[in-house]
Image 1: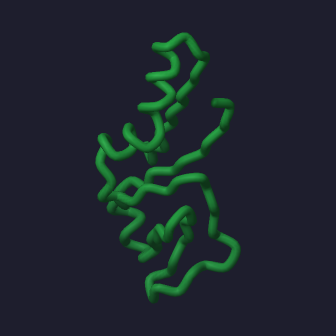
Image 2 (image 1 turned 30 degrees about the vertical axis):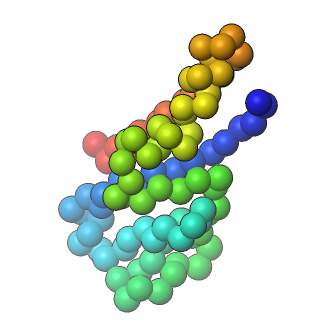
Length: 89
């Protein structure tokens, strides 16, 4: 089971982001930035193996991304999961 998978989970917008009207839109495995009028911003669209929206639960992320890696590690295979959090602070 050798595979690198990149996933993104969209966090809820912060107040200062909502003021300028921009928002991230999730469609399948793609995320794109849209202006206040709903039109996509040119050149600000990204594709990943998985993209989860703000409504996605921790359990869903675990089931789709980490469960198999953890089970394989318990069976003696190497596995690695890295998580990063973006903060405006």
